[in-house]
Figure 1 (cartoon, helix red, strand yellow):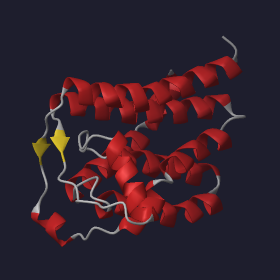
Figure 2 (figure 1 turned 90 degrees about the horizontal axis):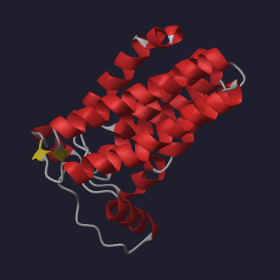
Figure 3 (figure 1 turned 135 degrees about the horizontal axis):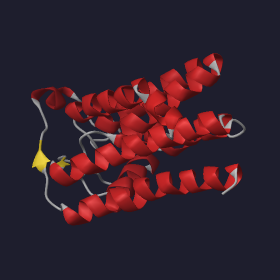
Figure 4 (figure 1 turned 135 degrees about the vertical axis):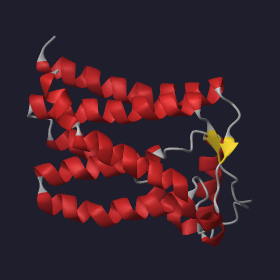
Amino acid sequence: MNEKSSKIALLLIIVALNSVGYKLAQFLRPDGFLITGWLDSFVPYVSYFVVPYALYPVIAIIPFVLYWNDYKKYKVVALSFAAVLAIAIIIFLFFQTTITRAHVEPNDLFNWGVSLIYSFDEPLNAFPSLHVAIPVIATLFVYLRNRRLGLYLVPVTVLIILSTVMIKQHAVVDIIGGLILAFGVFKYRRIFEKL
């Protein structure tokens, strides 16, 4: 398999884990533990945060574009993303969690967006938050490649993280889990250089 085919195959594995693997965990474990804590009661529902929430795939794809012409580093990025997804899916299968969502009336564009998200994503697979882990590890890899662009992405990533609790898709503890997962895999990314 040539490098281009290998890069596409790695990207397809990530897409499969993020879509099929994620949904399979919900199918196999349709009930979860509610792990909302007292901090969550202080977090308001803010529909406008659906905008940064929707930026998740944009942030996720940037490192793949930046590293496309450097196969060895691209492979490290791709395998790191795959590791984040695989670890999260394993946790979902053994410790499925859920979230209590807001009651949303789709009476404006932002609430309609939240309603749309609620309609195609079950309130499961909450801990650790992939909506936190993926943008964080993406931003870390972008920063390694291009510090200026990485610094520009930091506030966007922070808004994405905040959006997970502001639109009531995640609890605060899910954010903590997502951060630990992203920084943990990033710290040990050099393991993938040997593969």
